[in-house]
Image (cartoon, rainbow, N blue to C red):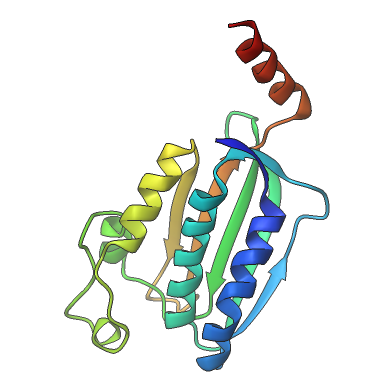
Length: 173
């Protein structure tokens, strides 16, 4: 785990996903944070989570996927960086949202699954990666209102002071 800049990871993942999105006639837009957003994390872990979220969004979006990076305070007041991937697809049922992070869970009976496929591993793997780096992965969706799906990754932000303090502690040991 090291200090990484989230805007850079997001930009790289979106660039990799653009050709898949274009092949499906899906437009992707990015709203980066206006200032650097540093977290203690793993570029491969964060990139893997975002790549999976973008892949799902490309499968299910009608026309558009929006990726945003924001700095915000969580419920305890701690500063976090939140990366949201929002598609304009049909949404997920409450049952599908409730079981989305379980291994081998996908709604195999749905017509969407028959068209798009999936093993039920991606979101479960993404959740394990998020947990490993101290982040939170959430899904917000509703099949009833057709508002699409939002997959959000929230990672505690780290300050220069906190990083220097950890480095000093490591040097002292």
